[in-house]
Length: 110
Image (cartoon, rainbow, N blue to C red; front, side, top):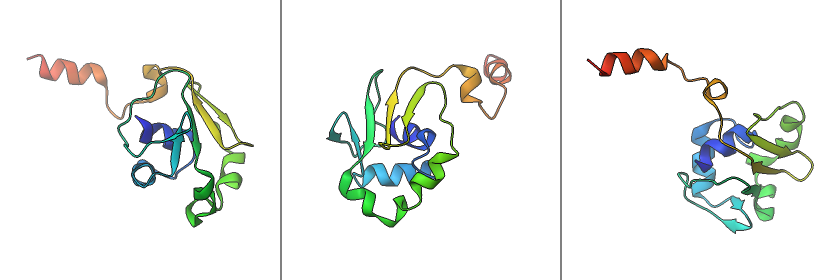
């Protein structure tokens, strides 16, 4: 999902904020404005912030915050250009689900 990827790139503080900013059209995917938070990304898609949106207060401290941020291995982040690339699908260890997946399957398989 685009909103989760925006959050994981470090462009926003949380997923709710990412969802709202995507809905308001502040992000470009491969040069096109996408305003659907559930937009599915494909390998090689480039994500960046619209040039006009960089002037907004929500993005004021973005460069400072990104200096100390490390993106997950399934994303490539260019901190200078404020651009990200979706390079692959995360594995289960990288996602770090909040619950034990095997316990959920065991519970619902009864």
